[in-house]
Amino acid sequence: MKIVKAEPEQLEEIKNFLISYEHSCAQLMAQVKFSFDKVMIVESDKIEGVLFWDNQLFHCIPFIAQGDVNKSTEFATEFLRLLKEKPVKCISGEKAGSAFITELMKKAGEEPAHINEYKVMTLEQQPNLPPEQLNPDDEIRRCTEKDCDIILPLQKNYFIKEVVVPGSKISDLVIAMELKKTLKNQIVYVLYSDGEPVAKANTNAIGTGYIQLGGIYTEPLYRRNYYSWHLIYKLCALIIKNKRKVCLFVRNRNGPAIQLYKRIGFQENGDFQITYF
Image (cartoon, rainbow, N blue to C red):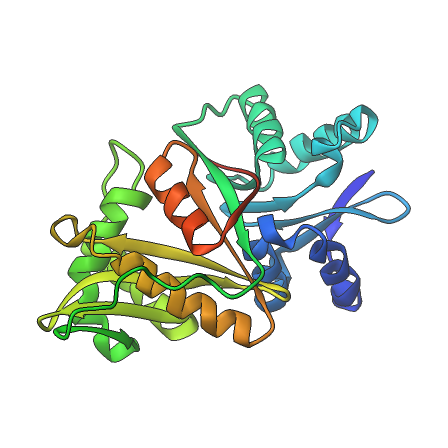
């Protein structure tokens, strides 16, 4: 088994390989489509796995979850060899694969700073309508780059709550840069109440068969108004209309969010792990 740089003529083969697993690797599929130069394949006589190897490592290595000891051992040898040349700061993907790579990193002397575990949830049909209509002074808008400054405080609160690793800090400049990139490349809906942005939701990976949601956040004072449900419904209805399926991942200890997604129509469909170093 080898881990080698993917060649352009392998693009369709790689995409076809990922389709069966895309609900848990939509971000990897998006990277394959738009940033192919950093894609690597795990191969023997055929493609066995796909990696997007940058400072953040996205992966799809199904033989690990399937318990194939021989292939996993061969992969470990190759991965540790490449790790000497290509450092990794974050591992993101299906839980069994992330946990396996995390253990390899530990063998190489890299201790995790933080590990987040999630449930993968998917939606393949029309979402359920919110149980209550919005108030007359509530409005959902699709935002663009020109709205960056207006919704930056909302994005900052989301980052602090859901993204920033405990004990670390992130600058407003970095948050603004990430927000501008999201506004440029993704679908972003924000709910305004009395003219103030108070809740948001967006896509964060546009794959082939699945589109992944992320950035879902409501300011604490405005919760219990079904604002997130309204935003998710609007995004999901648009995605389903365009013949795609929807996926997202939610922290596995966030019971209220899991129950909300189930009420909208999502089903649990696997486990996901992000490890930070």
